[in-house]
Amino acid sequence: MTVEGAQALREELQQRKSVQRPQITEAIAEGRAHGDLKENAEYHAAREQQGFNEGRIQEIEGRLADAQIIDISKMTASDKVIFGSTVTLIHTEKGTKSSAEIRYKIVGEDEADLKEGKISVMSPIARAIIGKSVGDVGVVETPNGQVEYEVDSVVLV
Image (tube, rainbow, N blue to C red; front, side, top):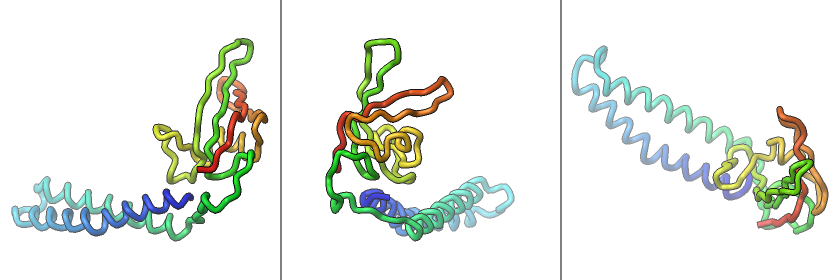
């Protein structure tokens, strides 16, 4: 995982422990004060929320403990696609003259967010282009057949 990804997980962990946990505890106490716990929807909702929050805390702590954090700012720039690099790919349709340009940053599984242009190092596209250089073509197997992506540029940001 990248340094930014680890920092985002640490921030979420801090938020869950110091803000959400006390709020949930307060909601449980408030639900108990209403009396009969068998039919108390507020109490049960707060307990469910507590279970989810504690589960997420354990998940984040486990991921941070097992993570290999890679500082991409200390890596030497090259034209090879590696973890942490931002790549511009050209997707050319076979048999047509149209092409589409897409840009992705290759990150760890926990950081992947397609809306932000971040794909997991384990994704089919990333696996097809890792180790390729500018001008090389990576082939991705899809249910509709093979899709080719030409590496147009590689940047370490």
